[in-house]
Length: 148
Image 1 (cartoon, rainbow, N blue to C red):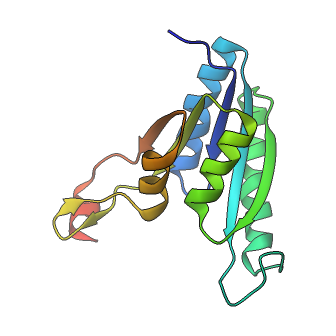
Image 2 (image 1 turned 90 degrees about the horizontal axis):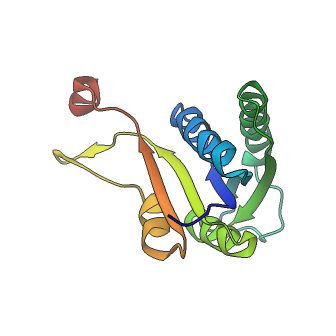
């Protein structure tokens, strides 16, 4: 099994972020790997890419929460707030720039038209990432199935 030296964890403020951080943290401790947590603020095409969109403050709060959880898990992390047109492309580019060996990301159980669906971001990452990708999906529940 190849050594994992750098793990990238994209977060978006969902409860699955905690699961992804816990899983990645255990792997990082075992491999003495670096961990980078990123949040991507998607900038609408109507604005310049370096504009400060409304989601920037929320992104900072999401990263602060991830940093706090990492401290509780005794994991050293670097946090980064990125701005991009599409989150998936930004995450893949960041993983490549950091030479990450693994992306660990949480995702909700999304049921559309009677079948589980990946979102655009996770689908893009799975299709384009040059490293391993682990998805930590929310557990299935009948409430998610019925939309209740």
